[in-house]
Every structure is written in structure tokens, then in C-alpha cells.
Length: 474
Image (cartoon, rainbow, N blue to C red):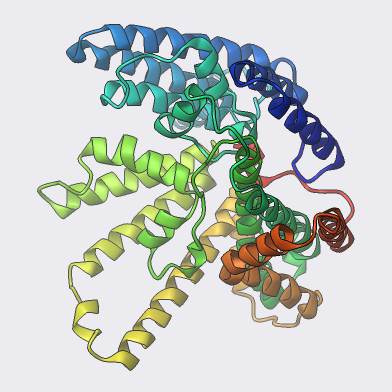
């Protein structure tokens, strides 16, 4: 059940009315039922895994809350092991089987391991990490008591974020669930404008760039010129931003309409002037999760040597790559991002930027160059993220080196899609404020007409059929 579809619109209108008609004491249980219905809509078999995993986390949380502080870490280790094992089975089993086969073949041993096929549960990475934040909250002393099963199950299965994030922290969302949420929708007009902006990003900009440029070029890069491939790389750079940030906007909006506040998952990442800033603004819920629960626990930047800090950075970025998928290309993507951050750390030790801040023209030039380097580095690495295989990624890179520079596809269509993406990137907050004001302050009888016009614009400009959200596969 995708967000920008008629079936989800009808589903949400029904549950919105039902949720707010109920008395507050019945809302959490009703929301839990809605969560499981929504998740079961993808595949009923997913509910078995979700329920079983929730039971395990609930029991571990109970044990941790009752145990002495010095013993809580053992239950935390068990929870982390079970969670990672769950991801290992459903996401990485085939990957490690292939690696083992290659290793045995290299050693001269002919012993092929049998392939085991598992159906991949939608959003397993998201609800697994979300549940882990609950166990870490108890272990870190952020929670003195374990959650009830109903509240915990509602938190783990929270339907707006279960399929593609953002990863919600227990100290944020679970606390709100335990308090019963708000007594009314949070900033409903702002939520409606976020819904329209998110739908526009996904249905119009992301889908347009995908169908017109990204899919044709990446499916067969050998048939296109270098200039066309370069445009396709930039098109995907904007496509994935509009796709995922659009989903996050709609998730935050849906949660607000149900009385729950979620944190932003994107903060203009493509305006970053270095990779560290980029990762503080891109997929914030995941990057902050890796920072808080992996990087800092490895010692973070409080190491005796820059070399040890660099190893921690590269390891965490490799983990980020592996989280996205069990493929070598994701490891390359994460590893190169890690290497870029390490090089940046060495460069920042030179302390060059403070020396030029007194020169306005030099400072502006420096920031412009830094932005261009960061944006293009990120764009180039998206090749490994988008390609269906390592061979395809290398084929795209090889195509860029060709000397054939004719434009095979419409350059005007490319510029139109890219322009819309940059408008969403640069002017997103201002557009949201204007939309909010237009809905809030127009006469009551005009509001439905205005909403209908916004919906009509999105449907008219969007292509037929809506491609799945990119992050559904993670």
C-alpha cells in the first residue's frame, strides 16, 4: 500500500476518522490493530516475524529493567545478537553463502552450499533498528521501566514508518505512545502541505526523472553517450533525494495528523559543503543511529590517534553500506564515503578555512568549491548505489570516459526535472510555509476546492503508475 495512491488515501481517511472518534484510552490498541493491518497488507506472513520479534524484544526489555545495572548489558548483547541474526537470515544469508562458495573455490575445495530462499520482509531493517533503540534506552538509563507489550508493539509496528523509515527512537515515539499521543492532530495544515510536497517530490519529480532518464540509461549504458550517462547520474542524484525525502515528508505528515511528532530525516543534504555535513543531513535517523550506537561505542573521535579514529569511521560507513544491501557495490559505496570522510578529517587538521575567513571573496570561493566537490563526489558514488550489479556500475563509469558527447535523450526534459528537484531542495521550507498559509487562511468552503486543485496538479503532472519507493527494498 503506497502513500500516493487512492487505496492509501481511502484507508487513511477511514482510520483518521475512526482514530479521533475513539476515546483516548482506546486509541493505542486501535493504532496497534491498524499497524498490523497495514503491514499485513504487504504479505500476511510478515506479521508472524513482526509479532515473534516483538515478543522477544518485550521479554528482553522486562529482564533488563529488572536486572542490576551491571547485568543489563548481557541482555542487551542478546538483543543485539538476535536482531543482527534476524537481518543476517533475511538480508545477508545468500550474500555470505556466495562469499563462502568463492572462498572455497579459491582454496580448491568443490563444496557448493545449497541456496536457501527466504521471502524478504518489507522494512525489516527499519523496525529492527527501531526496536534496538528501546533496548539501548534501558541500558543507557534513559528508561527506568520497561514498556507494556501493547505500547512496545505499537512502537515497533508504527505503520507510517515501518516500511521505509525514518527510524524512530524509543525516547521520542515510544514516549509519545505511552502518553497516548496528542489530543488532536499536530499542526494539521502544515501536515497537509507536507503531504502535498512529499507527493509532488515522489509522484512528479522522482518518477519523472526515473522513467525519462535513469531507467533507460542504467539498464543499458553501452547504448548511450558520455554526456547522456553523466546527465543520468545527476538525474538519479536528484531522484533518490526526492524519492526518499518525499516519503519522509509524507510519513511525518501522517504521524502529525494522528497526533505524533517525528523528527526530520533530511535537512537540505545537497547544500552541504563537506561529507561530514552531508551525513548529518542525509537519512538523519540512520546516520545518527550508527553514530550513537556504533561509532561512539567504538570510541568515536576520542581516540589517541587519528589512524584509530579513521578506522572507526571507515568501519561505520561500511556498516552503513551493508545495511542498505548485501552486495559488494554497497560496500564500495559505503567504503568510499568512509574514505572521503577520513581524507576530510586529515584535511581539516590543516586548519585552512579559518585563515581565509577574513577575506570575503576568498571565503565564498572556498565554500563554492567545497560544495561542488562534495556534491559531485556524492553524485558519482550514487552510481554504485543505483546499479543492479557491480558490472553495471563499472559499465556506467566506463561509459562516462567515452569521447562521444552527443545528447541521446531530450536535454530539455532533463533540465526540467533537475530544476524541479532543485526547487524542492532550495525552496522546500518556503513552499511548505506558503502552502500551509494558503490552506489555513482560505475560507472554509474553499479549502476542499484548494486541496482538490493541489491533488489534480500532482496527478496531472505525474506519470501513469507510481514506481515503488527506493527504500522499500531495505
